[in-house]
Length: 421
Ligand SMILES: CC(=O)N[C@H]1[C@@H](OP(=O)(O)OP(=O)(O)OC[C@H]2O[C@@H](n3ccc(=O)[nH]c3=O)[C@H](O)[C@@H]2O)O[C@H](CO)[C@@H](O)[C@@H]1O
Ligand SMILES: C=C(OP(=O)(O)O)C(=O)O
Image 1: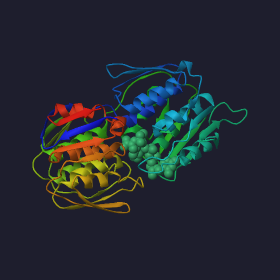
Image 2: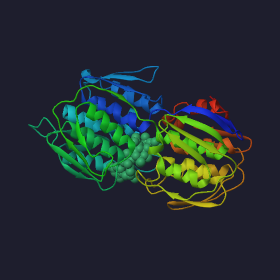
Image 3: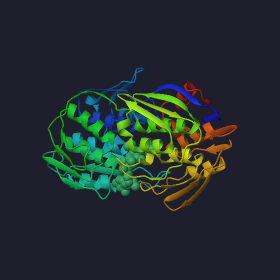
Image 4: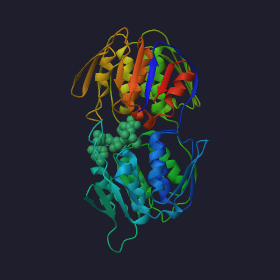
């Protein structure tokens, strides 16, 4: 199993390229299932989750190739097996995104229920309820969602869907299903994450009629057929935010090319309050930091609030900042798995339910720690970059699920970090 060995204490300096967003690329690969015409996505990141999604859709009979230049060319003309088997779904929860498109195009689908995961139980009840409101018949048998249309129907029908909570992949599933449904669908309480807007733009290019993406109410007028398109995946705000926190923690001066500051406003505001200098313009974010910053309290909420996917990385920064801070996680019930590992590196953190209280310390000291989930892994890497001595981060397959060669990018900025088998 791969590990990272980090010798901390190096300032980060230089320029790096922000990759395409995992959380946009995954639904967009599924959107290609909605048409029999070729689709080309560019700026697709090289991540384990993308490889898994490509495996999943190839298994359906789709031809899909990830090229050296980051393009993925897809052709779902030959799709003949609308099924997502457990073996592939269990390693990537985003597989549930195949359900909406398969149902909309084929009228039936068999998608494994995702299991729980380290950060929480993550049910898919809202996905099922919403698609049922659109006329789908869905039963759960032997761990699979078996979805079909009632006798005599060939298309889903538009519906008014109000979810119990804001759900990102739920909103995406409904948008994709509604694009080919009969009549109008209105999504209330819709997610507003930038990845929703990026998917909507792709669907519109394919001929979908969508309005209101980026707001709490999205309207979709179904069409009979969608066509192929070329679409560039939006920059990954979470990868960019992770590097901003890393530089804020180690000190240094780094330019993130292609970074979208407008998608990271709350995080950037917190980093500025902490004492980092951040400049941003068209297609770049520059971060400069020196010495210990001031700890910042925050609570995670849906976009445009503080992203849960940045909680662990910002907490790592708080661990070595001046003063105390309170971090409240409101989205996932079990997203503090990094805390015990940060404590092994010398951090002072106490958990009380949804709240972690962090007392900043002057230094961390290297140790062997275990990655438990994707962003937890990133927080341990940040902590390792500032810790004295050697930190070994074990089980980095979690990290590889969502970061495009993170250690190479960090090495390019002067970090002492290597991957070992
Ligand atoms: C591939 C992708 O885009 N993943 C992101 C997506 O995950 P994902 O879309 O899975 O997360 P959701 O927005 O759906 O989850 C929000 C909350 O709603 C709950 N819920 C959701 C659906 C449902 O049917 N029932 C239910 O109870 C979840 O357990 C969670 O507590 O948004 C999360 C919240 O920003 C991010 O952390 C993930 O990185
Ligand atoms: C939780 C995350 O992703 P996923 O929904 O793919 O598990 C994440 O990107 O931090």
